[in-house]
Image (cartoon, rainbow, N blue to C red; front, side, top):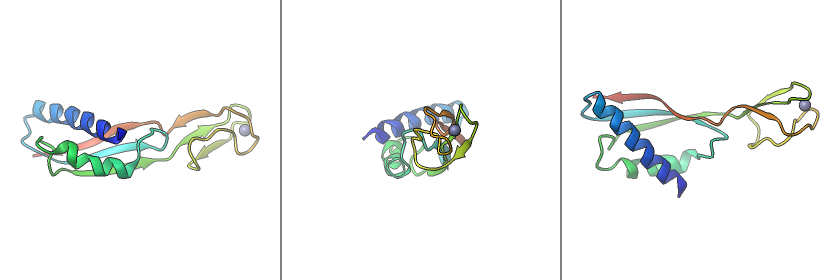
Length: 114
Ligand SMILES: [Zn+2]
């Protein structure tokens, strides 16, 4: 499952950051996950506690903020947010490919430590 390897590398990265800050424990993590990032919320939520076991992140609360895909049509300039991903063609004029403006991100917005 590819979310498990994502969860593991995320935990490693966060644990390093927490140690640098001299934290004893990470209590919460807030992630931003784009609709085009290829990462699904539910498997990630499922894998996170497994990846966190035995680390400073064990028991941390995981909050995921989903960002819808955002695209722009280079032909007519129409901008679309949301909708099915990946968006292959402009819903207004049918031109393809569309330019991707957002929704590919997978990043940590915030981490709470004690
Ligand atoms: Zn268009």
